Amino acid sequence: MKARTRVNHPPAVKLPDDNRPLVAPIYQSVKFTFDDVAESQRQSRGEREGFQYSRVSNPTLRQLELTLAELQGRDGCLLASSGMGAVSLALLSLCRQGDHVVLFAESYQPTRHVVRRLLSRYGVRHTLLSIDDLDALEATLAATPTRLIVFESPTNPVLKIADVERIVAAARQHGALTVLDNTFAGFHNHGQFDIDVFVHSLTKYAAGHGDVMGGAVIARRELIDAMRGDGIVLGATLDPHTAFLIQRGLKTYFLRYERQCENAQAVAQFLASHPAVARVSYPGLASHPQHALAQRQMRDMGTLVSFELRTDIVSAERFANALQLFAISASLGSTESLVQPGQLMMPRDLDAAQRAWAGVAEATIRLSVGIEDSADLIEDLRQALESS
Image 1 (cartoon, rainbow, N blue to C red):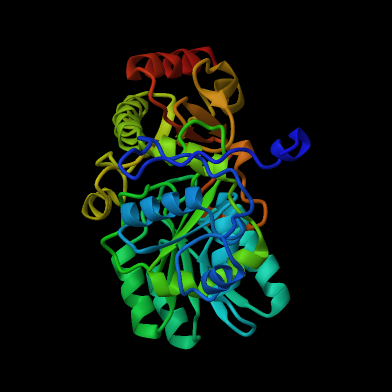
Image 2: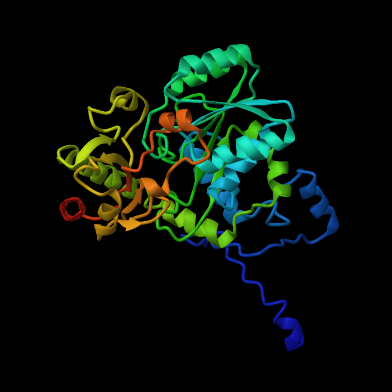
């Protein structure tokens, strides 16, 4: 074989059956091949295992899909190149022209955009409610045949807790599907409820280090199989190397999440005792309006802390600027601590009444608490409060 040919057809290395890598390799290949056309056709018809094209399936992605589905307590998973890719895939594939969707003001703004602007262009109607008003949800479902209920718990950014059991019961009674963005709660929470579809931003806790993006749709296998074709042609495919990094990040998922929750509890308790803080919203505090509900539904109280400053004492902007360990940044779930002030989170797509439901004000601060020493984090918060 000439050198020009060899560099495009390198020697194959096959491991013996009893000799395997401890860490699965990255299948950084777009294409896969079979020895003959007949086997390729069999695989295309679903008559045998195998892979042909990475937009359709890839071994590295498949390992991550299996891991995430098991963590969430389901048997099906689809991956996307971002969290919003996963949200969009789920909503686009599950809705048809003429369907009705219920969503809530207390939700991620890009998710509201998909429902209120993108889906509405194609004849999907919606009703926007507050997650605090489940009587209105039940009345809406009774009056209007509904395809999907889309919600979060805890909500972004003020950490309200949805009554998951009541929402699921209402959906079952009226034949609606439930779609829960479970990113804030993590893969180990809410699996006990009869949620139809979970979506996650893998950018957050799964990867954990703020250096890759990804998303996942997790559900029972028959729902995932029904969505798979749409996911393939939408083309928001996760890269194999990114999937490998997320799979690697999952090895420390519980260690990171547990430490972050411990730190968040300590931070919340400190803030609740500070005279410059008007109120703290953290489900682990007894003062949280849904503390008891969170204890029933969740194994832990999460890694985010939301609070409001007394602006007669402290400037929110100066406070954020004065922090040294909390970086001013979007996103959450990575090992370092982050801060977002209210100016960066205002729900400008909502009207005045809906903004009141969302509960975000100029004085609102959201902290994503990392894995640093909690004493250092508290000291940073203390000096920023005093200097601002």
